[in-house]
Length: 272
Image (cartoon, rainbow, N blue to C red):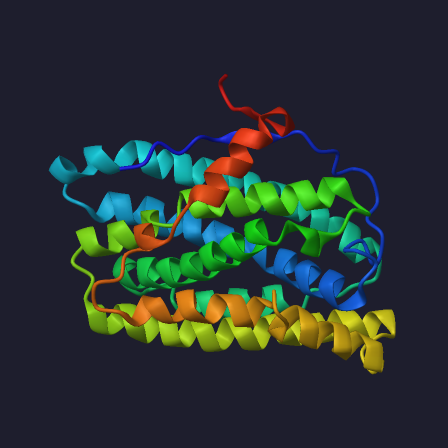
């Protein structure tokens, strides 16, 4: 089991956010803003999944997981709170979060599902966030230098996602979740996630008046498929989830540990 540290990030989320805060780039800003829009409700689902997963275990088997679940919940709750503040600024800029209602609708249909399905969905999403986190920690210049506060937020969030990448997966396995449903949910989550992030990114660009600019999509193509492109660099680790012997711990977390070590003055461990 992992010892997950709950940290309070030392950033001021009261200050306004510039429309194109990410290196002055419309596409990058719209993409990261879209991701942020999904986090508060999504991370609450992840929290509920692992808490309910722990309760579903026989009492005699819960002890090894209790501390890790506490850390997972604390980290995700902190992410949820800061991204809620972030999203308030996006609302003030006139952006409409159409992704969150779709997430709520989809999750509503799972209300009566066995907790193993909740954990399978959570594990699938946590793989997405872990590979995105590794990519971002490897390419922090993507975030630019115009808003150091938001760059710090995204890199800190990435480091912690890498830290707790195994929690839901391990609990799914502990509750005898089978391989067929693990892979079935990963396929579904992959399709829904990719469609929704592109849909919300496009909506954000439309609000900016940048959706139909050639420069926007030239930048977007480079961001997704260029030498450091998101799709180009994450396809292989995404595909690894389908391996029969896959485990999230196989993903190297050196970049996460290094960022947390190098940036220890940017956060305070809760309780320290």
